[in-house]
Length: 446
Length: 85
Image: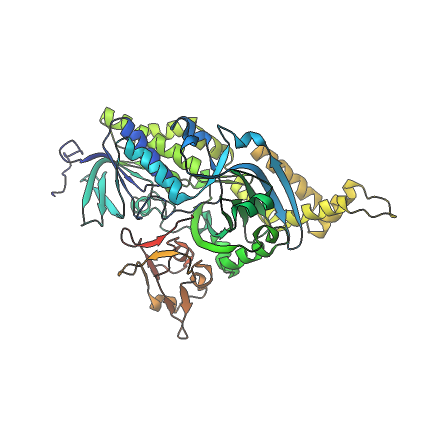
């Protein structure tokens, strides 16, 4: 195929598709769905043998984002369990303190969130796109970008018989390592500090054993998120229930993990042995072990979302929200992907697929939760991953609880201020710092 | 690792330049790789295998030597296949 010349803006004769979407994860499938519904020609290029086969997540898919896209989505979504109990646990080697919330309301339609398995969830969402008219090419790697004489992106090269796919726009939903975003100069080649490594074990347990141990029944499930289980490496842990498996894992800051020279599976082993976690897992057997990177830097580390002929959505655009009490990614991927697809439709209609023609994408996300939440919580990742929150506060809070709940009579009860002072002093935290961090937290989350 | 489905391709998708590794002082890839694919050799190089790779990208991200680890995706349809991800 001849290289397009400068006059050759991708038009009907050179572009086979309105859009090539790279990656059939949540962002890619949502983008393809929006485009197919708008009547645009779109092909998804997925490197795995099926959608979701390369993907790993850490707990819950929150459903509200699906309401507008797939009415009554809960009727056929491949759910494992509907989360009705959400717990945040702070721990030391021998202690734990939990905020544990439970509501039956989350166990009925329209549901708040669910646990699922990505091989099935991603396949389900991709099928919505193909049913709407998108094409799906699996087992195909997009190996590089095609550009015209002006440097505009006009398609991708693939490793399927070296075929080239030409399109007006490439939507790179190729995940956290996005080599296409790196090739386009939108993401740095390697910048470990904004990334965490998640490792996860999926453990088999009989369904009724899970029901009993976690106090749920039927399709009810539990999500526990944990702070203080990573030997001081910034990060956290999680444990959540699937139908007849539970998933347990840790997330650890990449540079700190490397510097600590601790193997990630040691962190999982620690967590599994913790007295508050081990009883949930007793007698289980390993079904699968997995690892994946997570872009946790938030708003201030997001790349430009569009360039001439190309845009980014989902993890390739660093849209995972890692803000302490909120840990979300799949919903941000779906919302950004769908918005990207709609923006491509508008750009194709206007005949301008340059960066300025695609700029309505970012404007749209700035009106939606995607960038509103990210912008509001832009300082949350730094606070959540800070030394005091990671290394001192879990133990401080556990000792605070111990000081309040331990009955010391015949000595008289200590006052709350004294218990707080003692706990803070034991963990090397000044009350001034505690107050400053509380204020900082209120500013970010309030 | 016996529980993970790997469809091993003929082409190694990771290459390591052991010459560069010999001057490395951290060997970060050795401990950080969640699949434990990197092993130091007695002469300061790095032995690795690509067959049981999760394709996470940790190794090239933590590597402090430009060009020591070259990392691409395995060919389409090959590599790790997560069933419970």
